[in-house]
Image 1 (tube, rainbow, N blue to C red):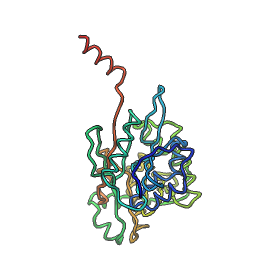
Image 2: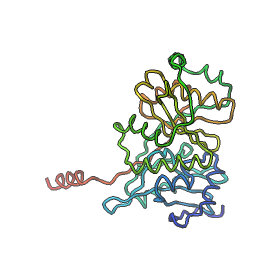
Image 3: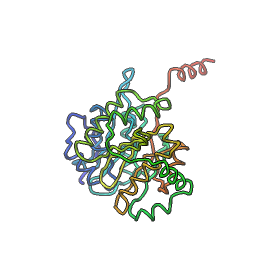
Image 4: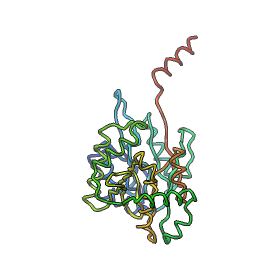
Length: 314
């Protein structure tokens, strides 16, 4: 690479082929950073910071509110950050990317990825976030031995309940089930669900995904959308009913995925979590923790500005 000069590229002129080649070649390339995923999840509202001939790239989703442009983490898009086509990422270059982001955007809630570490910045608040990843490069029995005792008991309960694993669930059923389970806790706009349905449909079309459901007496108790990219199995969208919790349907669901992909080079990516109850449940499968950082920088709210003005003139 002859130059480390950074340049902004608008969405309309991003070379999708070169972009995706960089993500494909990157050791830590993430499905969230592929051009098709970004196009669908943001409705093409993203731009990019690029070095060289797409040697280093950083996708930046954006929105506008009250005339102010800001960058954010789209729902169902865990990690973004900087990716490299053929080499490691120098922490100094990573810091340059972050400085450019800070110059252009004054309001930021932007997730880096787990490989974006080692830089120093006293100009921005970095929130450490948790991801959990289970290595499936081993026999099922070996992986099962690392399950917690509580999880093993729950799987016995699921077996006795005669749960059935299937892959004939429809996208709309998965989304409706997700809303019923989580919408009261996390208010997600309908437009984001519609965008994620496009992700599901694209995954089906390209053969890079699975739609899975656990049922009992022909009633769905838990379901998920599983997305495959490189050696990762992403688990971005799952839900469980109250009866599903009673019969340990989610444990049964994940365990079946582990059985299917054991003895492979895959990683099962739980996609989190920093919610203690969720983290505690996922940890029962014996995964490794994989930390990443989120950049948080907010403009002062009108109430905050008013308080500052009052303090000055008090």
